Image (cartoon, rainbow, N blue to C red; front, side):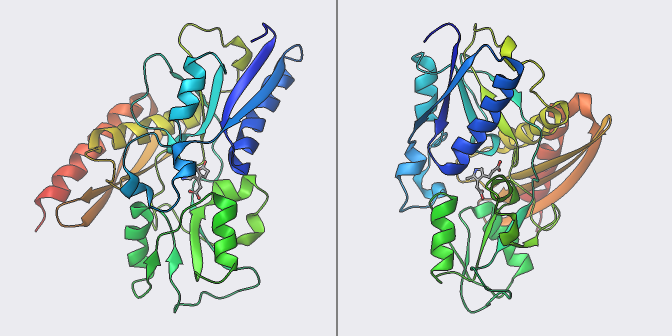
Length: 298
Ligand SMILES: NCc1[nH]cc(CCC(=O)O)c1CC(=O)O
């Protein structure tokens, strides 16, 4: 790599590239002397499309290949959706910065030209987290798994196989597809995934990342830290659908969490308020409280 050249590793989906371009544009603006290039690659999660991710198992399906490029010196940064990042990151590849958070909510998208939800066709979504919480909102509807990147999913929706899709508002907004959103679910209706709406910039230990100065958003860092600490403590298996969402108000954090009991398929939710400086502690505290509640209820 040339000294004045920065290579960013990225998944190759349209959304991933767009997200990497957002980081690229920041670096270029702050450091006009640098040349910044995006190196795209396919990840295991992009290749295995016939199974739900819960079933594929294994952690970091969307990051392994990017980690390798970073380790091998083919890139100096990786840009990820924070929600796709495993809770444990290797010490050699630390998370350097979190972006300002885009809308963290989940939303409903209907087929092109449709204005009302057809309750006779299944809803499409790809995570147990969403599926569980949807049962309360649409108790009579079937929920069917759907995989593939955002474009693929939207195409399947428009072909008429599903009544609607549950997606992250963040991805749709970044892709300029906000107009397709039919309904926003509040963070109480569907607690979002930890890190949803935040971009994570990952680097290599020992490198100088001065060119990123000012990029990290302090509120997103606090929120993401609380959410990830919550999930990390509960991370029993790769299929446990834990949800966590933090709102930051000045020096305060308001955290929501969901704990899923694998034994009986039930879940409990709860909230906790605390100081932002204790973000991770708050996450662990709520996790412990909810685990207790979720394991001991009759
Ligand atoms: N799992 C795929 C994924 N990873 C990040 C986003 C959306 C963007 C974000 O959360 O920052 C999506 C799409 C979705 O869940 O609808």
